Amino acid sequence: MGSFISPRYMKISNTPNTSSTITGFILLGFPCPREGQILLFLLFSLLYLLTRMGNGSIICAVYWDQRLHTPMYILLTNFSFLEIWYVMLANFLSDTKVISFSGCFLQFYFFFSLGSTECFFLAIMAFDRYLAICRPLHYPTIMTGRLCTNLVVSCWILGFLWFPVPIIVISQMSFCGSRIIDHFLCDPGPLLALICARASVMEFFWMILSSLLLFIPFLCIMVSYALVLRAVLRVPSAGGQRKAFSTCGSHLAVVSLFYGSVMVMYLSPTSEHESGMQKLVTLFYSVGTPLINPVIYGLRNKDMKYALQKFLGI
Image (cartoon, rainbow, N blue to C red):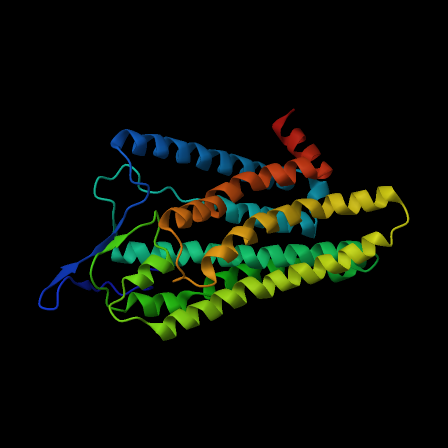
């Protein structure tokens, strides 16, 4: 990743006749007194530890329980591993709040690559549930270990290859005026707002990529669950229906939490959102959702609940 971004300096023009060379941006984060910054740091550190513990427990439980070595739980362990790295601690204790130019765009790249990978994993997990419920007799022959491995690898590769080109292009543009980003991470909206000349083509290209990334997996998820719903409603026994809904309920809850917040923010990165609302929504899907996911999967899935109890010795 060392060659991902050119180490050049940015030219930030303050007036028509003067310019200053700087090496980074200022992330405002959550402006508050020093004591508040310390409290926020401690709070997010606690949330980060809880997220790692929750998702790490799922990974360990699946690893140690041979009964869970199935495609559904292999996908879940990869998803949990992804969620561990999705949470990033903001630089609350820094007095300057400065992030380097390269650091800003590397953060930009990894944050959105992880988000892209999550979209693909959610779609693949929905497809897996469709096969398991709608085609149970053919499921073992279709969702083989090899296919599962190929799907997992494809999710990671596609996720990390979706946004490099536009991010590299944005990093080569000139930035004018203030270098202040009213956010706690390098987000496309504030960054595009700092470009000297409005990059309409780049804004349109970013919107197209974001729309494809969100709507193609989302469409696959909706089609999969529409077919699942149709199949479940044909099941004569109420017990069978409850079991099927229980199996899919946790995944649908995660999909709702993730897409409900992300679609509001990134279909148009330069749309007019209040900075406070941007921070809260970003905070929810980047910190809140990874924290909640282990609770959803652990409490709604009996096999996972039993494996977690066994692993934790409860």
